[in-house]
Length: 278
Ligand code: SF4
Ligand code: SF4
Image (cartoon, rainbow, N blue to C red):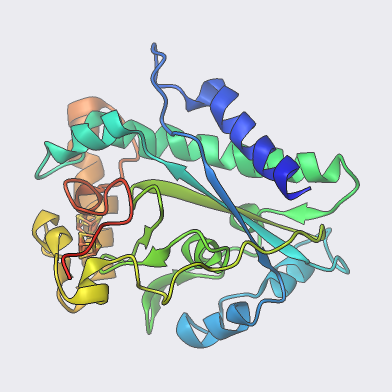
C-alpha cells in the first residue's frame, strides 16, 4: 500500500492541470518525493519541547479535528513538491524581489498543494480509511509570537523531517534530496504504513553550515538581512515576505502571494544535498 499511496501522489501532481503555468505546458513542480512516519514516533512528542507545547502530535490533531474524534492516527504521509529547474534559474537572477515564475509557483503552486491534500484525504477515505490534512483542519492555528518565533500547531517541515525527507538548514528550511526549493504537505491517516526511516546522521546534516562550518551562501542572498550565522530572524523575514514583497511584486507582475525564496536559489543546496569540502 506504501507504493500505491506514493504513486497516487505522484500521479496527481504529474497529471493535474493545476500544476501548469498559465497558457503553457511548463509545470510548477517536478515529481514529488514521498515519505511515511509512524504517528506514534516519539519525535512528535519531542516537538512539543523543540517547537512549543502548542504543537500537536498526530493523535492530538486527529482527535481534535471535528468528525475525526475516536480515529486512531497510525501514519503521517508527507511529500515534497520540488520547484522546477527553470523556475529556480529565474529566481537565481533576482536580488531584491522574487521572479515572476517563483511568485506564480508560490501562489498557484500552493493552490495545487491544497488540492493534493484534499485529494489524498478523499483517496484514502474512498478505500475505507480515515484521514485528515493538518493544514486544512480547523485545529490548525498560527501563533505570531512564541519562543521560537512564528509557529503553528503543525509544522509541515517537521513532519517531512520525521518521514525522512530531509534535514533542517541555516535559513530554517528543509534540505531534501531534491534541494531546498519546494513546497511541503502532509496527511495523517489511520492506515498503517511502514515508516520510511531517517537516513541522515543528524537533524541538520544536509546543511553545509551545520555539517562542516562552511557555505553560508544563503546569508548573502537575503535582501533584508534576515539571515546570519546565528540563524533566521523569522519576524524580519515575514515582514518582508508578507509585507514589502507582495506589494512590489503585485505591481510588477500582478501576482497576489509571492513568497521570496532568494535564499533558496543561487545556493549550493538549491536542487540537491550539497557536497561538502571536508
Ligand atoms: S546555502 Fe549553505 S548554509 Fe545556507 S542552507 Fe544551504 S547549505 Fe546551508
Ligand atoms: S525567504 Fe527571503 S526574506 Fe526570508 S530569509 Fe530567505 S531571502 Fe530572506
